[in-house]
Image: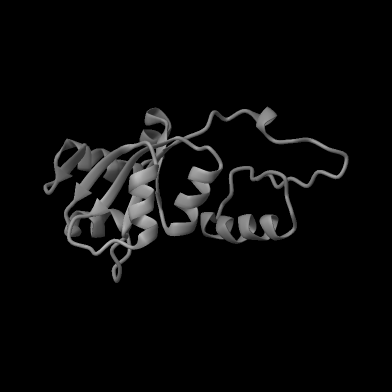
Length: 145
């Protein structure tokens, strides 16, 4: 069953809070994901996708249609202006957004070995650099960030 969201109702406010409020993300145990690669990787790696949101007025790509058909999640048809607002970019509207459950934060989930490379952040002062550091860690084959 697909639920329709065309106004800034309580559900929309919850999604909006996931974008900008870390406390609410932690409390709810979920976060918002957008983009083909991040959503695909979440599904392929067994992350629980709770909800899929899609633009009611867009012609969906094959990838988006397949995700909506195969991913076991609640589906929401969301108006274009609300998807634009949730996408957070001035020039584009995301085709698909996913609400994904935060995995339990347990260090045992990171495999430890004799040649393990790990990157640890301790109260970073410039959050803008974290993306660069994560991509660099991935390029060097880090086992955990």
